[in-house]
Length: 316
Image (cartoon, rainbow, N blue to C red; front, side, top):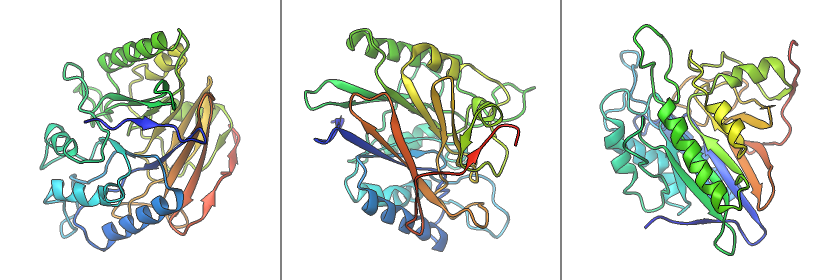
């Protein structure tokens, strides 16, 4: 039975984004990740948690380093802090979740067994596993907010194009159709929406160099080498107010491009690379019913709340 999401009586809905946990073996670093998650959840009391990929790490490790031998157990431990609190949660897969040992289909079938997940398998006739839509309803049971989730894949499917995968044309067509249906049910008005995926869109690079941004860019934007047009589709449909990704562990900036806020999460996992002076944390998102806007802030591992990130001007 799919759990329904509702705005609170005070007309707010709060989301915690955890990203890039890179859970492997329940070792010291993984348990440090859990401690961070527990403290964020207890402080913020969100209505929904979204994991934006690389929840577990099944990729190459340096010989002698811990590996993820039991991916289903690792995933169970990774989501335990959320699941044990009974908080609804959703996940999109990253490039490292199913690099080896387990397939996306196998991992998704396990995910769907959790009592508190609101993740869906999504259509089988389009690329990816876990393309789905959730709606958040008002007190009257009407859809008041849409949440879109995309599987951004792993590596380029085209042999002569090197680099990361992109959201494919059939996924974009699926999104536009879902958006149209919600708009039709909403008196032909676009339903306010957010979108979640793992690998940043090329527009994340564009916004940093062309618009005022807030936050840090301490590594390259590791987007796909091909722009498949998801951002253009969102701009045309007029519903998505903000997008949220992970993938690049020491980027946490956001900026607005053509009316859409492109936001990185804050890397949450300790069992992977980071940078001195750039503590792990989570991105928080708060929406208000009936408003086409949202507030966002970071909560860091030491409990610090970062409500205003440093401003970056293009060309500086």
